[in-house]
Amino acid sequence: MTVELETGTRIRTRKAILDAAVRVLAQDPGASLGQIADAADVGRTTLHRYFPDRADLLAAVTQEAGRRLGDAAVRARLEEGPGLDALLRACQTCLTLGDLLTLLFTETISLEACGDEDGFSRALDDAIARGLADGTLDPRLSPAWLQGTLWSSLYLAWSELREGTSPQHDVVGQLLLTVRKALSA
Amino acid sequence: MTVELETGTRIRTRKAILDAAVRVLAQDPGASLGQIADAADVGRTTLHRYFPDRADLLAAVTQEAGRRLGDAAVRARLEEGPGLDALLRACQTCLTLGDLLTLLFTETISLEACGDEDGFSRALDDAIARGLADGTLDPRLSPAWLQGTLWSSLYLAWSELREGTSPQHDVVGQLLLTVRKALSA
DNA sequence: CCTTTATGGAACATCAGTGTTCCACTGGAG
DNA sequence: CTCCAGTGGAACACTGATGTTCCATAAAGG
Image (cartoon, rainbow over all chains, first blue to last red; front, side, top):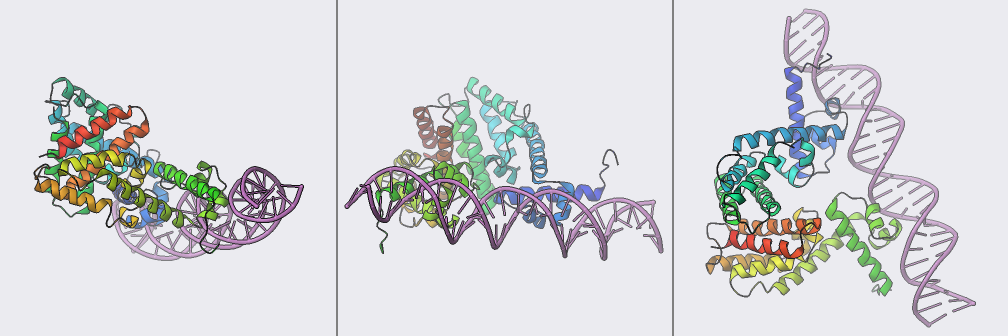
């Protein structure tokens, strides 16, 4: 019991709570723990058993976001190829983050606190620097603006997907088209 | 007293509270009325005297947003010239909305509730339709996506301005450049 | 089958935000 | 100077969220 051996049941419950938290908080950052527990089909008591207080839950969500973001960075192979192409790959990969995008974008959880120093954010900075050097990114746009445009376009795309009114294929297409047009030299 | 003749003092106080509400809520949509009163340099009692409850305050902010948005639509002359140019004028005009942009974008207040039926939103739809018809806007992008890109770029620009790290001139330049590149045919 | 293990609900104390009332004060208009 | 509109603060009741404890129950696994 010293190392908290996690049984299958506990892992599953923990994941259900975490998923519900992401889903509910994305829609309402001020949602109560009761709402999250309900969404997870779990008693409020159980939620507190896994995450003693709100801060613990938020920290766990943040950590999960960091993990997923790290995965995304690896899958997108941000260090390969021209800078612009890397950014477009980042777009596609990040769309799979779903509601986590909303939490990051609205600063319900902070990218800085994700333990992301050597992860996604860094890799993105590198890709942008590379793109400016290799001439695939518009030199009239600052690195901060390039990164900001990427994030806000991503958030827009996720919003559209979440609405569910437009088919995924269309949204991804418009996202990539827009970002390419906006950022390319 | 039947028509609530507003003295200069009352008008000034009311405005101070409204301004503070916009400023504070933009930074934290869940801010307490106490925080808003403090930011307005006004006692909480006084705030309640002007806006009996939170909903009243929010409604007043929403109404103010509608008014400012209506002004913006007029000033931008959205119905004139090519669609793309109208949208670029809209960008510049809307940047003056400041923190109201944040409230609208984060849905702290809703555009629909602004009483905006015949105002900004409608004019924007028209400008987009016109731009698609006159060939200045990219026909591969849906009206919804075009409008979404406009808003998110606007929000990004305002975020940069708010940070205060980059000079206003640079931000506006990058905004217009990005939007033009992204949306033009 | 029986024993852990995990759970849900009820009850409770606590706390922060809200909305109200009352009273004392202040400064500007008359 | 004298009102009095406008204000701020103290005090209060009320509400909803939070975090805790305890107990009964269910289900997973040997």
